[in-house]
Length: 195
Image 1 (tube, one colour):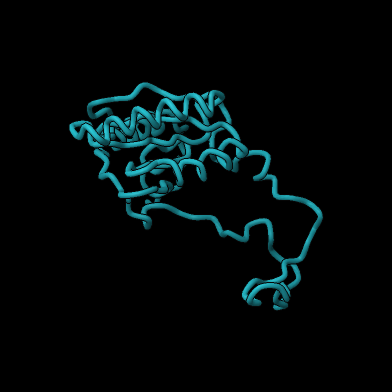
Image 2 (tube, rainbow, N blue to C red):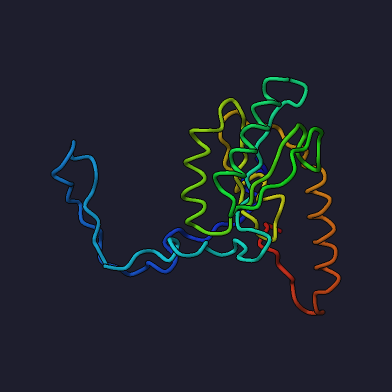
C-alpha cells in the first residue's frame, strides 16, 4: 500500500456536524450488541450512485482484477472457467480479455471486470467472494488518481498480489508535471498531497 500519510483525509463527519448526540440504546433482539440508530426515512445517496471522486463515466466506477499464476495449469483453467461464468451470469458487466502475461502494474495473469453502479457492485462482489475459488482479486475505484486507487483505496480478496507500481508512479508524475505547467501564476496548485 502506498504510504497513507501521503494523503489528506476529510473528516468522516463532514456534513454531519452540530447534530444531536446519538442514542446509547441497544437492540433488544440477538445479543444486544448492536445500537439503535436514529431513522430519518431517507436512505443514503450511496445506494443510488457512487460517492465522489469515483467516476460515473463510461470508464466504470470500479475495476476488479482477478489474478492467477499463468504457469500453473490448474489456476489457469480455473481462471478461464470463472471468466466464462462471469460473462454468462453477468453479461451487463464489461469483462476484458484474459491476459497470460504481466500487463501494466499487474505482474501475473489476470482479467478485469468493470462495475458501473452500486447495484452491480452489491451483486457482483459478494458473488465473487464465494465463487473466486483459489484466485486473488483486487477491487479498486476509478478516480483521477490511479496510483492511489491501486494502493490506498484498494481492497483485496484472497492473497495480495504485489503490484508493479512503477507504471502508475510514472503516470502520476507526468500528470503532476502537466498540472503544474497549467497552474496560473500566483496560485499554489495544491493537489491534496502533503507539501
